[in-house]
Image (cartoon, rainbow, N blue to C red; front, side):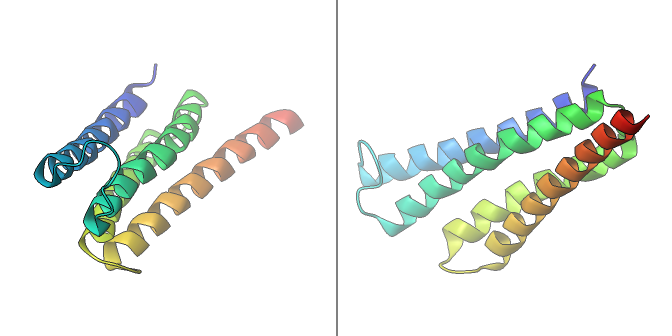
Length: 132
């Protein structure tokens, strides 16, 4: 059973829906049918949403594999909380300003660290089982 993955997948799904809603609000306000209409803020809203859709599935696959392999529940909650935090920080920083804002930098860094940690844990699990 993937109870913990289910919790964090659901929280992350809510973040994606929120980001999608922000794109819809932008497009309605600016009367943009498709795309960004050349609007810099619109481009950032769309990239924030796309970025989440690019990173969240990979992280959740690794997360689910770690849980299925018997990952420590407290570690899973810590990793899941970090991922949610990173995915909340990133769009705020990306949409609100140009360049390396606090949210954009730390949101990306946290997300990458979570993915690297999960990849390492899953590789370590494989190696431990292959040697045994």
